[in-house]
Each structure stands twice: as C-alpha cells, then as structure tokens.
Image 1 (spheres, rainbow, N blue to C red):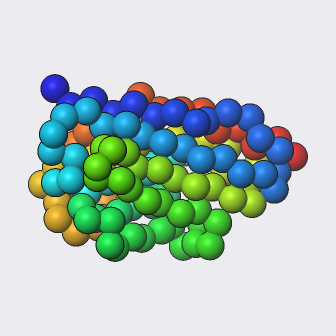
Image 2 (cartoon, helix red, strand yellow; image 1 turned 180 degrees about the vertical axis):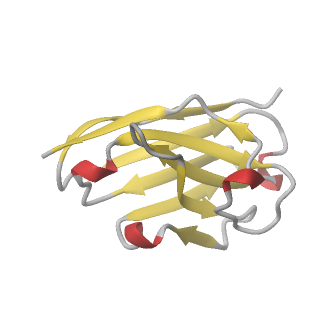
Length: 125
C-alpha cells in the first residue's frame, strides 16, 4: 500500500521560510504526478503547486508564483515544497498528494487519489 508522509511544517514568522517534504513509499513514485495542497480553517482545499512525473514541468497557484517552489527526487521518492517570504495568510494544513493515472502536471484536485495526513504550517505576524 502506497503511503505519503509529510514533514517540515511548523511555526514561522512572517517573511520566513519553510521547506516541506513528502516521502512516498513503494516502487512506482516516478509514475505519479504530484501536488501540494493546503486547507485553511473554513476554506476549501486548494492546490498550491504541482509537478509532472519527470519533474520537468511545474505549475503554481497564481497568487503564489515566485514564493513557492516544488521539486521532486525520483531516486529518493520525495517531493518538496520550498516556501519563502511566508505570510500569515499562508497558514494552513499542507497536504502532499499523488495522481497515479496522470502523466502531465495537474492542479485539479479530482485527479489526485492518494493523500498524506497533512502537516500544519503557521505563520505569525
């Protein structure tokens, strides 16, 4: 059974940085498109960044471009999210997700069928 385990969340001051990492079990990680989502209290879960199978193509939520960077290491079965210049509105639970049947980069939530348990990111003002 494939498992996704996030790490790296925590409390940071506005303007600071955090790096989230997601470790994926199993031998087929390189066949998954991957994404990072977040969900703030009272809001819907939204995709913040996505990456295709090879890592050669990425996409970001428009409001986050330039601050967040997604990357993957298919040899280590990991996908990371580097978050810079954090703002209080970035506070949320961040989830790693895998789309097993998708070759391309996708930010559509319905394409993702495997999810991690989430990691809390809190940005203080």
